[in-house]
Amino acid sequence: MQLRNVLLILGFLALLAGVGLAVIWARMPTQTPSEENAEARRPAILVAAADIPQGAPLRADQFNWKEVPASEVMPGNIARGQEPAGLYVGAVARRPISAGEAIDRNALVLPSERNFLAATLAPGMYAVALSVEPSQIAAGLIRPGDRVDVILSQSMGDRGGVPIAVDGTVLRDIRVVAVDQWFAGPVPAGEKSAVMAPAASKMPKTVTLEMTEGDAKRLLVATQIGRVTLALRSLESSYIVSE
Image 1 (cartoon, rainbow, N blue to C red):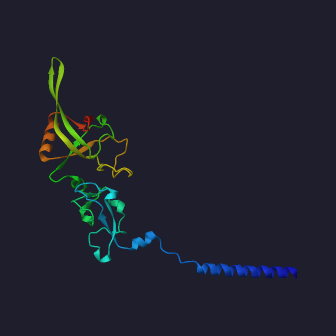
Image 2 (image 1 turned 180 degrees about the vertical axis):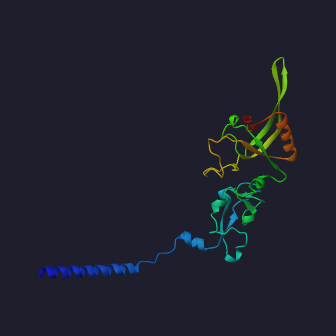
């Protein structure tokens, strides 16, 4: 009899506990959507946070999202939720974009797109590829965006068994557009290396330079009559880094 009473009491207590838990569960607030999901439902377009010059690689601090009424989202706008904003870091602007202006997708060229190299050139300039010897280049010392001088070394035969050579600078202050397939511009502090950076152990074979049509002709003649060397420009001196 005592055992039966104990079991009844335990069953009654369990029932009370279950009722109490049900009441607590019913009074709990309904889970609200996260702030991130709520923002994703509000229309927003990508706008320039600062002036973006033509041909300059985009940095992460040059654009952000701006919430707008759905009626103001125009064709060509980059809308939040379509593609991640980080996709456009390193893209090049086909034309100048003013701060606060909505960024049109057609105004950008991604590094993976066919016309990317052409978009990096200043108006009226040409990209000229120059083959370099991997055994004579310091890996990683010359990068896209650097400025170089082009030096011509020409052999003039020998005099009394002594070789005679003439050196001279044929082009000055030329911008390096690419090293092999590496088009990345300077990387801001705190950001990871930009797109298409070469492996540290890879020796460059081609350097692409930005120059005028006349400079391109001079470079072509120089490569035919002598040995061309690129000298990296610095504030204090020029260091020969490739041949």
